[in-house]
Each structure stands twice: as structure tokens, then as C-alpha cells.
Image 1 (spheres, rainbow, N blue to C red):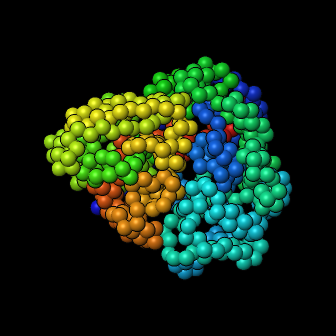
Image 2 (image 1 turned 135 degrees about the vertical axis):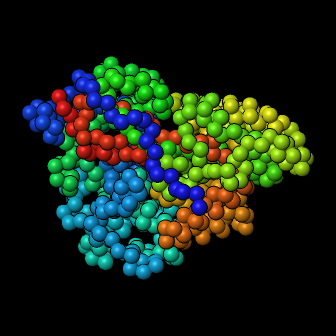
Image 3 (image 1 turned 180 degrees about the vertical axis):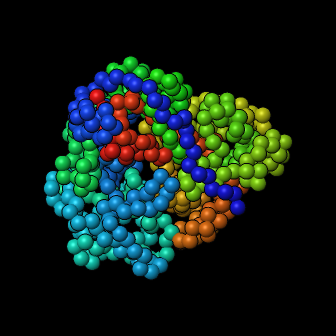
Length: 524
């Protein structure tokens, strides 16, 4: 079995030079000098994009830009350590009663930011809402048959069948958030996208469109002494260079992130600390095989054989990427491609032979992708891909458009052949396959009931024992590679983070949710 990848660091360890901060600060300077956390102050974090469709409604939001904001406001029953170990969250303990029954015991004394207590009924309502909501969580909870409040502090989950994904889903930050039933039911759907009420460390204060989103300290937070910050402000600066420049120049910015690793690397030795983020962003190209050349598996296989993925990493991503399968290389459960992975070693002659067998010696294939904002950094990868496919006689037509149009085309199926959709960390290994192995799903344009991989994914969901899951995952990855259902060019970190040494107590999590901002404090 190919050994699963351990989470990889994206950048070097933190530097140790001093940088004078520029944002409004506060706290005890003596404590700061002694390395002890101090309370107060405003931390300004320059980010690329504000929450998109769904806004701050945890059950309507699906985008990464939404989830890494929501994690500051809402919380989950369980959580995960950076290496994937499940730990207590809003629930202090959990128990698997039998193959299809789980119970969780809520912490005592937890309240929402308005002071109202967290109850078992809130948890039941939250999960009942999740299972019918349009967000991705609903697809992850399809095996949840019933959620019941046993008493004021205990909730029971009954599954329709054994399901190895369940605990991973309810423990994943950015997934199964718990809301206040009374507030959620009484707040109109449109308002819920611009308002929020959670148990998390911060409270929504103000959201100025395309300018900033400001959070303030939750005075009711159940973790004693946290957060240290009075204010956490996210400034929206779409331009990659502008964000890093604002950080470098001390222009009212204490921390920033970027997709471009080179921009962060340029800060080395200038008094900044760097995050270590895992390669959980798979640069995925999905297939519409409902008509045209890609309906023939041999054409799809020829495309895969024509690709030199390492060359794409080296030429188009500056070496910043890892060879990856469907589960991105930075996921703790991932297996890495090797010489035995079907169709992963470039072979132009074999590609041409397959095309000839399919009667498609020189097919023309279109690729739709986003060019706006920070997604423009991926364009060179598509251009190198075009050159490589041309060696096998395949013409790749590049169709650059906006991210909004890409999302619309994915959901509606309004793309002809290929569409590029960068991924992000998912709560369970099976979730990465939902895009193309769930028959009837809006995004699935390649498989139907009875096709290879569909039954195998369903079987993997039902496996609970870790070693068996890993074995079946490897088999499924090989099957998907052989059928060429998706082309993963490489995987890299979602973002690369840097912050001034004025920011203390913050450690970047590998999956780039920024949840550790709850522990951050300012040393002025």
C-alpha cells in the first residue's frame, strides 16, 4: 500500500526579527515583554475575498471564502487536531453505542453570544436543517436517519447504515456548525447571510461590502480567557501584491495571506513569521463526458497520458506543488501517486495509440477556467497543459472567464468538455469524490449508476475501520485514475500566511481556516 502523506509544511519556520506594528493596540506591555498573553487591541488581517454566495448563513454557504470567516463565529460539536485526531468541541464527550448509533454529551455552561444557553434542541434543529440545506453538508450527512435529544445535555444520532464518515463530518471545522434555533427560525433567510449568532470566540460587528468584515470579542465565550483580541478585522484586498505590500510597509495590516508563495518568501528575513499550510488545494479539472470526444474513456485516458504533471508544477507553479490524486496530497488520509498509478506517467505514444483506437486522432477539447482575482495564478498551468496535449495531437481550447461564471457552469452543467475547479480541504476522504461519483448530483457529468467507481465510493462510506478505509481508498484512487474521471494537475496550499512579530500566540493551521486567531494576542 502506498504510504499516506503526513501533512507537509509549505514555508520555512518563523523568523525572529522585530517589526513595529501599526494597528490600534492595547494591553499590558510588561506581560508582553515576558511573553505572556495580553488582552485587547485590534488585529487587522488582509485577505483576498469576502464571503460569497450564502454569506454568513452556515447552511447556505459552500465556498472556502465563507467557511474561514464562519469558523470565527460558529462552532462544531467535535473538532480535529492538525493530524486529524478527533477531539471535544461543544460536546465534551462522545460514544459509539453500536454500528449505527452515536451519542454526544454537551458541555455545561456554553452560551451563544447573546447569552442564551446552548441546548440539545439547538443541536437537533441544526442537524435537521443541515440535512435539508443546499450546502455541501447535506450530501455528507445523507446517512443520518434521525437526531434526537435524549435529555438537556445529550444528543443521539441514528444512522441508516454503518458510516465511516460521520464522526469526521461533525468534527470538521467549516462543516457542521451549531446554531441557535430561536434566532435562526426568526431571522429571514436573506438577513441570515449578513447577520450571525454563534457560540464562537468572535461576534459579527460590521460588514462593509468589498472593504472589510469586523468581528469583536465574544464576552460570553465558554473558553475562559479567550479570545485575547478585542477586535479582529478582515480587510478585503483582491490584489495579491497589494496585500503583501501593506503588510511589509506596516500600512495598518498585521497579517496577510496570498496564493503566491513567492510573495511571502520575499518577506523572509524582514521581521515576519510564516504559516505552515498543507497542500489541500487540488487543482482539479472535471469532465463533462455526456457527449463529444470525452464520452469515450480512451480519449479521457489519452489526455491523462499526455500530461507531465511534474513539469506543470515546475514550469507553471514555480515548483510550488505536490503530485496528487483526488484526495489532495496535504490531507492526512491521502495516498500519493507513484509509478503504479494508472496513466500518471507521461507516454505520448500510448496516448496517440488510444486516440487512434477511438477514431479521434486529433480531437479538439475545450477547458473553462477562472481568470479573475487570485485565480489568475493558475492560468500558466492550463497553458502548459495545452502545450503538452498538443504533443499527442489534442487541441485544447482555453476559455477563460470569471469565477462566478465557472461556478454557474459547474452547477448547471453548462460547459462542453473540461472545467477547472480548485478544491479545498474536506471533512472526510469520501467527500472529494462526490463531485463526479454521485449519480444524479448536479455537478456529476461523467458517471451514472452502474459505472465503475460509483458502488466503490458507496462501499467506502460504510467502512469504519481505518486500515480498511485506507486500503479501499487506494483502490478507488487507482480506479478513478484509470477511468480518467478527473485530472488533478497538482495540489498546493490554499494560501500562504505571514504576520508581523507584533502578532503573538498565532499558529497557522494546516487547512487554512485561521481558527487559531482565537489564541492570538498583540505585543505592542
